[in-house]
Length: 447
RNA sequence: GACCCUAUGGUCUAGCGGUUAGGACACCUCCCUUUCACGGAGGUAGCCCGGGUUCGAUUCCCGGUAGGGUCGCCA
Image (cartoon, chains in turn blue, green):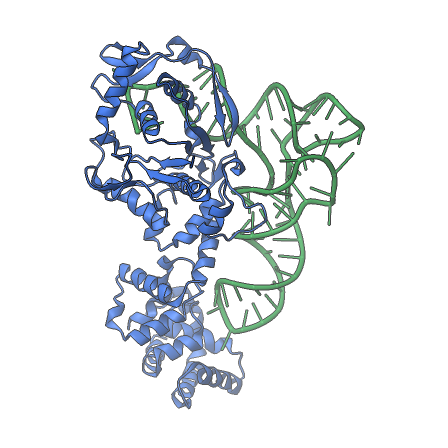
């Protein structure tokens, strides 16, 4: 029998990075085994759920490329879905729950008290066989000893998470429950329920959690916790996926860069690590830089234009060849597209603002005649391209008896306003003679 | 408070009784470079502590400590 796994997020309005990894591991296992990846929306808290909140999840998974074989097609709970085990929204499954509760009631495995329906919980310790953690024996805690039974249906008629989760897994034929380790202790409840329903529970695989760098729990507000951040900041899905794979799983051969396809081939549950991992943005950024550098030109262009537009730079106002040439000088230089507007903004504006500290250092009186000479050399260069400009600058430096750097830095500052950026000669070429001359002229008037 | 899980450099990890404890990120130095980035060459830094078991423990067992999780009419 082929495995059936599921990702069952609650639409809270954001997709936690840990949730994304849970989805990823489920997806990887399904793809590795040729099984089925089910997406189920746990929208039991009707008041807080909205279609927008579901869309955040759907969009996040789609962005990562984690396609589901069964589940909703849109964020609309009553909308279309794929798969024959639906509905895939808990809000649409209420009668299933009530039917199951009736069955429990009729067999005295549950009872009513104070308007709520409670489950007669097993008193003996329950063995949880876990594919990642191993066999875990879970006795009742001292608190639970006082009153081991727990609520299945609230007095307002709402079934609780533990109940619906188990019923859905049962009815959807889930064979492997791959979820965060925060559910490990509660798995005893789930196993007891499955048995009460007369079926063997699925296999469990509890994966370690992702924590903040300081070891604390990653919550909504923490940097990097929300998947949306990565979409917004111009990360590449392949980098995020790759990084997530490396948190709690290892190819064991020192490979760091892996495609989802590679991982799907090699991934398996028993190799998952048992300890929590701390989130390290630096390493993610490194991977991001790696993938960014390898981007095909058209995709780099597309993402760049998008990032610039988001920052208020309308590249449509410029000649397409100019835009492409400009962006070309940036490729391989930065890690996230969010950096691009600051990095390449000088191409798309006529008002250069100079870095104050750099201006203090480079826009000094002795540099004025140098800049003048350089301007003249540029003006008389046989052509205005990277090679001729480099030659012109070097000759000028030689004639002045100074190192090239004395011309390079003020020139870069005059033209871009900054101390670092794309290759100077190439950016000058792209900017073109007219703009370059004007900018040097303008800069010289400031000191 | 009880119970559960975990423990290799700052971080992610390889290791599954005998290794100069390997790799990656980050950091430092140097080279390349007219900036930055890339690339290249080096470097700093690690087996949580204490007991066992064993000829020998990072590795196995027990205890401690630390971190995380769970014990809801939250999910």
